[in-house]
Length: 232
Image (cartoon, rainbow, N blue to C red; front, top):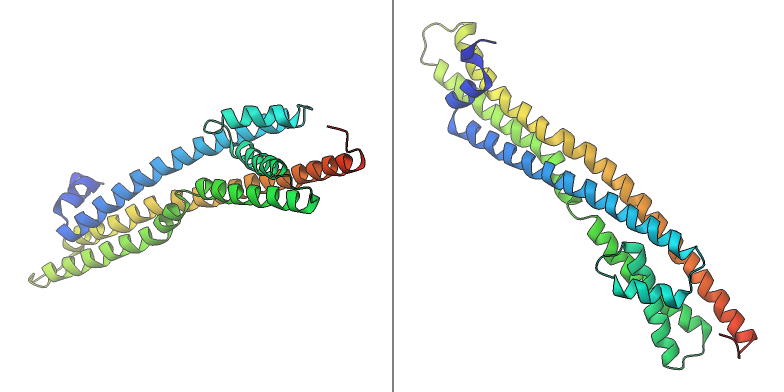
């Protein structure tokens, strides 16, 4: 490609609408990449926190000791740890109110964990809607710039007495750059959106499984306490 048809030269000679579209798409691309990197590191951190807490949970640590540690590190812990702390907190509050109905105790703990789970899921899904919007809208924005650029190019050619490929090529090329930039912004957003959605589903399934297992442990403890009131 010669200097006259370099991308920089094409953009400098393009109409202001095409230039605005390209600048907008480049900004969106940079922001989406920043969101992608943040999400990659945040999901990696979430999985590490969850794995560490689950390992500690199944190591046989006393639930009250585990709850005390989780309550102290609530802000710096992982989602699974905060879900556990929410369920345990509600369970203990109901016990302090002298509620003896096992069903009410379990339902209260489950509701608290479910509410905490939903909050954690909302945090995990942050920026996903932005990536979905970038992936679906960017090609159309680029196409708009292309259509406008082609219209602008043909309007300029109307005043020429003789039209050759050399006179048509720059105008068409500068218009097509907008579509290329639109795809450049959209493709990574779509790829990482699908990846993040899959990863978040796996994390959510792991947290829901933990909630069920923890509920079963509480149920067994309540059953044991019912049979031996002097225990615990």
